Image (tube, protein in one colour):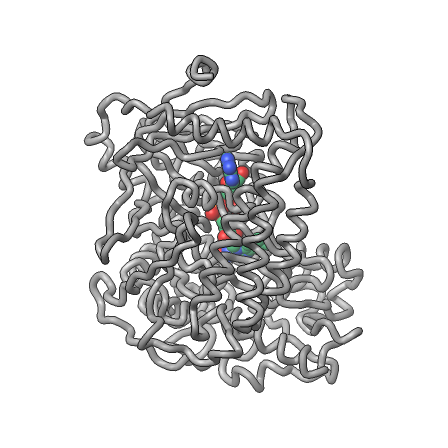
Length: 591
Ligand SMILES: Cc1cc2nc3c(=O)[nH]c(=O)nc-3n(C[C@H](O)[C@H](O)[C@H](O)COP(=O)(O)OP(=O)(O)OC[C@H]3O[C@@H](n4cnc5c(N)ncnc54)[C@H](O)[C@@H]3O)c2cc1C
């Protein structure tokens, strides 16, 4: 057996970046330009990463269309996070935002323009001027295809910088030594079915979100939380996994996203009586209140019998914007509505329902992108490992993310991590450290077990059961009873994941093998989510508990840390102190 393992093909790089979304490619660009050898792995062609689907915009206080500054952006982000965001990281992100966007502009990103040539900006949920006074125009947009423009720009820049892409490669496990330093990954080349050892002085996880653990999701099929599974199996914690964002406007029955940019352009939500109900829930920001707030209001309308059609959804009206604005600013939305809801929004409203969209939690990292663990109240950096983008919890989004702050997070922290790796690289310029065989064996054994099993449960069946369970137990409104049932169900399903099998054992492009491996990651995310949620006895941001309807800053102003082994929980304090400005102390969150 050992002989077989030693024969695994090996490659060496300064840096391996797992993920070619906005975060991975912004980071790799920084590294390749600095002359490091960098390999970027992706399960799909880079420009098919989920970032490509981002519609509405990227947030930055450019102040092109209404007065704005980074300090207001910071306040909105802290408040949006329901005070669970770390204020040092939030200050860092909001201060950097204008530079990060101008840099994209100089890279050639095709933003929409104002008549005077500056970048077009639209209002977005929770973004205000003067500390909550009124909506501000902060979302820099390329029509309703901002992510598409961003991802293609970054890809082209990376090609120019000679980044090496490993397309249709799936990273399997982190490789670590006794001291816990990360030394690279094992990875599956899908085309051949071969497994490689990729040795790296630094490994960056940029694997995106895991929204596919829910039945109704705006996420791409590849969003299966692989980086989170890899971290969890390596004994690293996952942070704040109870906080998942429901986007208010997924197309009812289809899940496909209708951007908040529609409401930014003036679209409004109506119930069956034709009432603009958000005026009741959020008198100041109305339809542009943050997402957790709007989703709960919609759910309430539906539960109280004011849903439209069969009562299961509300509608998003935008015909009053006129055909010209819709065709110019929201062309993809019109197409999505026609295709997936069978309505032309120039004439009719779109049926919408809150749909799972984004994970606020993830792999704990600081604002340089370094992965951190916490022991006995002490924070410790994991040598050789970074996490950026949606798979990371920096934590700038806390308990609820504001729209446009994710694309921003990708480029700000992708760039910061790249810079930090470059700056600290000389220290790590030694030759590659030896990788313990046991670390490689662990990963190979996982794959071999799956490969050798000839009978067991179908991947699809167990996957569907996880999705149905998550949908039922971890919804917009949660109860302790539902959550505790969810914990038990998901732990039972974890046992079933240990017994999955597939019949097709062929090597070349075996998607059954890939899906089985993805399921082993999804289950870790589902376990982390249910367990973390069932233990947080308060309502904050996206966690709305009927049993504990109030936010409890005395007991719960802290981050959850979940460990896979024994499904153990730990907690660590929120960083309330910003870098240079005064703390925004917690206060009631009204809009
Ligand atoms: C429909 C939609 C619209 C959105 N609109 C906006 C918006 O307007 N503004 C905003 O700020 N945010 C928006 N968001 C959120 C934002 O787009 C995402 O949070 C963000 O794009 C995630 O980027 P990422 O780089 O972290 O990961 P992704 O773009 O998801 O990329 C993940 C990468 O990791 C790779 N990968 C994963 N697992 C493995 C593995 N095991 N091995 C190798 N590679 C792997 C994938 O192939 C992919 O390349 C939207 C999200 C969705 C779903």
